[in-house]
Image (cartoon, rainbow, N blue to C red; front, top):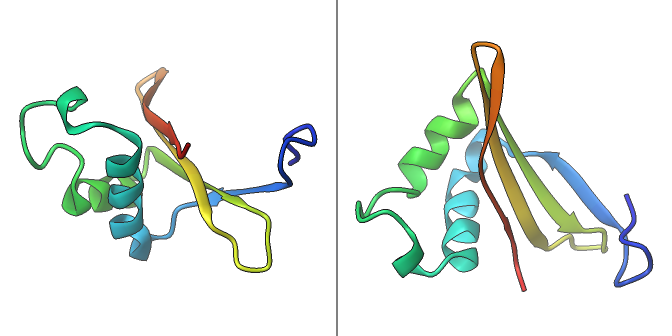
Length: 93
């Protein structure tokens, strides 16, 4: 996937179960704590691990396509009955 020439190609792939810590860190980097729900563990590593392991949850990681890919953003969505919901999406600035 390309970004229209604004900075290089992107790689988008599923998040691996071992990357829950990375997913939590990306979420933290993308959102100010004041914007998050009051629970301190709302998007912590344990919650992210549950999302990644969920059979009806889609967790994607976007990285810059460089020799050493660096994370650029993520998406978490899930299917519930006959609907789908986008839970969160973040892009590093």
